[in-house]
Image 1 (cartoon, helix red, strand yellow):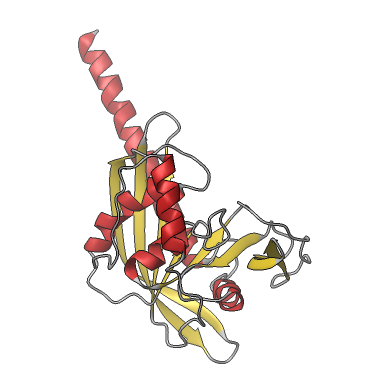
Image 2 (spheres, helix red, strand yellow; image 1 turned 90 degrees about the vertical axis):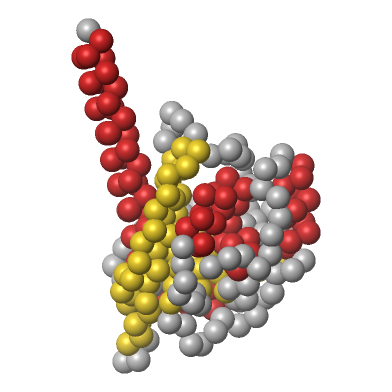
Length: 248
């Protein structure tokens, strides 16, 4: 799968900002497709000690239970990649740090994707185009951001029961929802990316939260990215130890 829209990635903050302003005008806010079969979930984890990203793309088939309108997912495919990260960590510019690592994984995918979900922001972003929105626009696929923390906006605390929510506002405009995805847990910050609306984004994510705070597809790719990172760290530690012993 190749992006339908391209732009430079090896840029500085100022150029990245201009790209975001330019791209946000192309985002489409429209009802989410009713016939969704395949979800792509992405995650990238990092170490604190080096500039390496551990990227995961997972494909999941969606299984609907019409009895209670809940969803379940079946893991179909997992792709991983380890690569040096060039762009610095700057809030609001996560796309330029993570998407260059994720693009090669999408190139390995031949299946049709109906929705992309990411542990990041959709339009709940200072320039209206967070990681999820940026990815959706690049591939012209519906996308949703499901973040564990707020990047921008104001809200009142939602109720404590699963499914309780409050609107996330920016300048009196609703840009997402603050969702209680499990009883008495910290809320999620859900916002539409491309080809999706605020209510659709929240309902879709809520239906993918089985018994954990994080929705199942993102929880799974997050788990794999952390496992990948830890295994590589362990491997490097072992190699360093063996080198030390051989030189002693």
